[in-house]
Image (cartoon, rainbow, N blue to C red):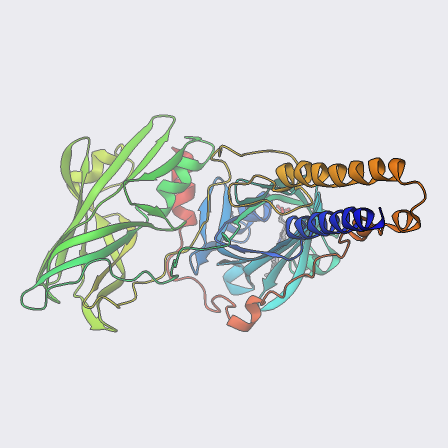
Length: 477
Ligand code: HEM
């Protein structure tokens, strides 16, 4: 019966069209946005030693949220795209090298990477000019658990990169390896804001406040010591504390505050562990009278004054704010750091922000994204799959393809059976084959803004304070 054949043909067409649309949905039809992540690169160890050594007698400074971790400079706040096995990612932060009384004066800022498969390019703004600095190879781009990452790619200097080193290195010379990661933005992202809104409405009637934050990095050389090759350790944050690279953020600050007198208790723990290192700093608090303040925290169940500082809070943009306030170690905290630092030694600056309205925007914390070293349930060291992974890292093709095949095979079996019964029906032989037109189009790379437009070239003056001396001092211990 011709009508039966036409029905089956239509069914086959519908089934194959469904397959095609399912495949279209499952295929990498568009770039995935990346947001939050870190890039670790130590430039070149001999260069770092040369800068702070007896020849250049210089110093190294990091800024715009860049920090030092695991013997490398850590850049932050990734943004970019991942598209069918290619990642294009921009990072933020700068590292400034100064030496020979200012003859050597170079800033590496806002690095970015373009990476496909197991090779790519590292770009860096060198004194404001975007430069292809190094060719990267030898490590696979991994996409799993909602994170795109490369661990320990070899870096070799390009000809353009060599000019940044005044000809002291040649193209092809090995630089320190590069590792980077960035988080895939979930298709239905939470309304996560780059500026965190206040979590609690402060009361206008008295000095009671809530939703305050405290940013403090403890001490740059302490973090370097813990993560360096002496202690070979690391740190973790818990109970609400967040790692911003060069600072830790403690949230939920509550208490009372005027511009000169304030008492704020925060939540969260940062725990440092390593060889002979076991220090957890929990639930810090700041107390100030007449602008003279102390930061304390629970250490092994005891509240200890850690650093003192001078800071009046300034009211601006619905915040009471004290930014980058210098701090010094208290006598009581000397044993906390094993006696390596003396009372009065400079510790990292702190920032206090107290929201005065619900809409007040707190200072932005550099976004390091997920820790690529933390294993996730879907973690994999396999190279990136061609198709986009879903939010949990599972490839949707895993169930779509078998389901689609079942549909097609079912329809095809029906056609064959009908053909056998109705060999004389000419329409049956002209069943179209839309399955052959399954989508093959390549995804279109999305545009990514370059940090040059942000005008972040780093400093032009020598650093007022330098941390490398601290680092050297620690290394001698
Ligand atoms: C007053 C100007 C400078 C003097 C007198 C000077 C001197 C030197 C000397 C003597 C060395 C050899 C160090 C060694 O072999 O241990 C050296 C190495 C080096 N210099 Fe300079 N330099 C100057 C400026 C610069 C500038 C502007 C740069 C640009 C970044 C630079 C980058 C380097 C590099 C990359 C090395 C090799 C470091 C290594 O990996 O061992 N120098 N310099």
